[in-house]
Each structure stands twice: as structure tokens, then as C-alpha cells.
Length: 113
Image (cartoon, rainbow, N blue to C red; front, top):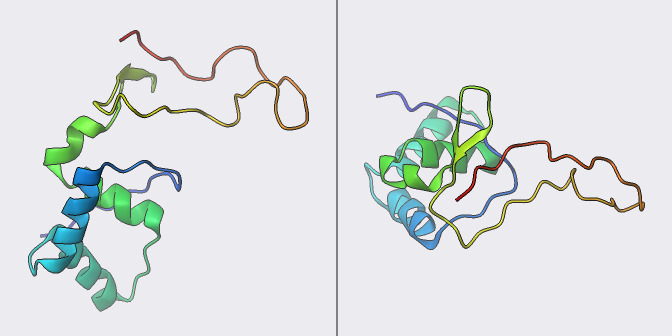
């Protein structure tokens, strides 16, 4: 079976359960991580961490609840279950590092909890 490849952010917060899943899957001969690694080695393709972790997450149905859900226009429709985490876009902070105010309106929609 082919594995769908995904690309994600270089900035991520991984739950302990997911990290343990990744480590265990690297040790198991038929584990997703090991199969993905073998596929990359056999084809000579390199994979960045942005691609590896996103691919692992998106191909692991038991962790889909940890992903935010977007609506048809790309706005956040549902929070992931990781409420202890805070998401912040660094390009929205006002003022920025140079004391300038770039925007006063958020660049994304956050639904009420």
C-alpha cells in the first residue's frame, strides 16, 4: 500500500502519546514509521521533519482528534482536543520586534469554545 505524504509546519507541538506512537512504530517491522523510513531509504528520497511528522499524523486515525478542523473557506471550524496548547501566529503580534504595528485585525478566525 502507498502512504499518502503530507507537508506540515516546522513548528509543532506533539503530544506524549503521539511521540510514543512514533517511537513504537519505528521499532515494529510493520509500523507506519518503519514502513515510511524503509520506503524513503529504498527510493533514495529524503524527508524533512515537516513532512515526516505530518505524514505520520495524517496517516494515523487514532490521532485525528488532535488536528484542528477547517471549514470550506479555510477558517478554523473546530479546536483540536489539545486545549493546554496555545497557537500564536508570529506575524500578527503587535507591535512587532521593531515596534511597528502590522495589523490590528487577526488574520484567521477562531470559533468560540
